[in-house]
Amino acid sequence: MLHSGVRLDEYVYTAGIRAYCEVRNLDGAKGLVARMQDEGDKVSAVPYNVLIYGLCKNQRVREAVDVKNSMLSRGAAADEVTCRTLVYGFCRTEELDMALEMTGDMASLGFVPSEANCSFMLDRLRKKGRVEEAFSCCREP
Image (cartoon, rainbow, N blue to C red; front, top):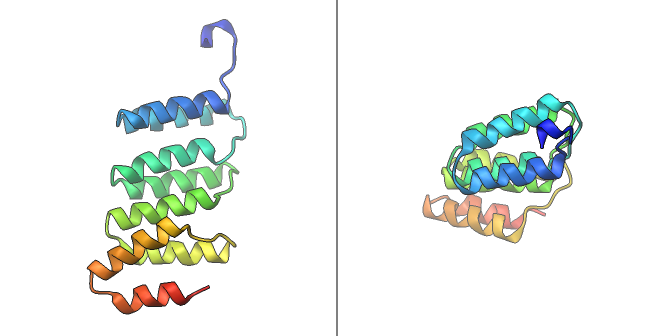
């Protein structure tokens, strides 16, 4: 396709990134994001979110944060999916303080954590003996 003069768009890149993530070739997915960025077209958060999810699912949440920062520097705004996915990633790696901080950041941006996010985070807090924090999270609007 590249040699035929057809330009790849955000949808094609997103499908490729997802495919790489599904086979756990996260470096391939990151390479495809880098290639997409080299194209110079402004894209939405969607392809980045796919990579962020793949990284978080594989407990590479620090790299996911780097992807989010790269996304922001390229002019794509983080959305609810970006934030929810990072909360999920921080919970998976048991970085609960970071998960709580990200939840606070979400609220300041006007985003609401999903029921699944809250449930996952509260369960992790409870298992770590941080029951009061878990109840506090539930009470906050």
